[in-house]
Length: 97
Image 1: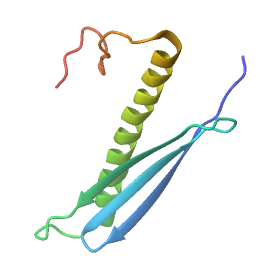
Image 2: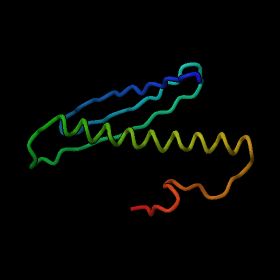
Image 3: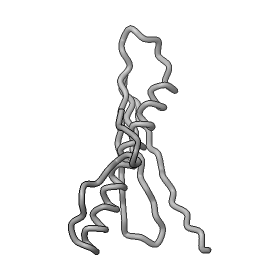
Image 4: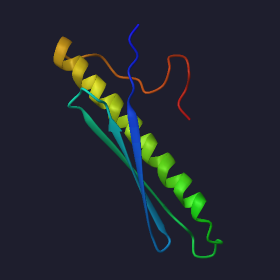
């Protein structure tokens, strides 16, 4: 079985109390580009802990990337087979929070 490797590059910027993250999916040999974005803002009454802002912003960027990648897959399926029924973002039998 041939293995494939996709890389997610994370870019983090901080400006004042706001942290922004961008997650870029790199799939060698493919023209597909998928980017997720996330941000976090520190409440002025909280202590400044930059790592927490990084973690929140990156986590949100990765969540956004996952949803966008899912949408790319659904679009590819529709292109190949025609419209599909409802698309569920959770596993069957599991309720959404």
